Image (cartoon, rainbow over all chains, first blue to last red; front, side, top):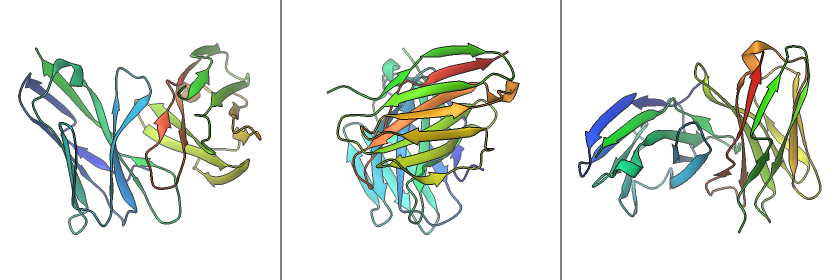
Length: 111
Length: 112
């Protein structure tokens, strides 16, 4: 079963705008990761945030984690058409390395 | 350096047949995981191998099996294929526990 729930399911924006995607989960996590997938191909790892971290940045990406609310958000600033993809949050729990994925947010950036 | 390589990229099989998918992880990565992606169920964990040992297994029937070789390459096998096994099968490798995974491009299996 999916542990992560992502919101919104789909997002359409114009180039240059910011895109924010949210992920909520149900039980305690070790870390939370965000992945991008283009057109049903492999996933690309974007960023990992540990349970004791609150915010991380990587280029145009900003991830926050609120363990009290069991939620995370991914912000893509100054979006580009090339950012068009599906974005997934995934988390690990306990001693397991398995990733539990959300259903994903489909982002469309219009030129 | 080379990424995670999955073969074949596409596969069409008939119901009842069996199939073997292959995954070569990034050199030096000892952890290999397999995931199934379908439109209905999303991304679901199949199993994880580390140094030839299965460390974790997802909630899939026994028709789904896997193994890892001494060179870290991994295979997964699905026997007695069903139409519902049609999916994108993704392999991922990792160097250490608390880092992100590198995924292959996947094998798209169609069962007819």
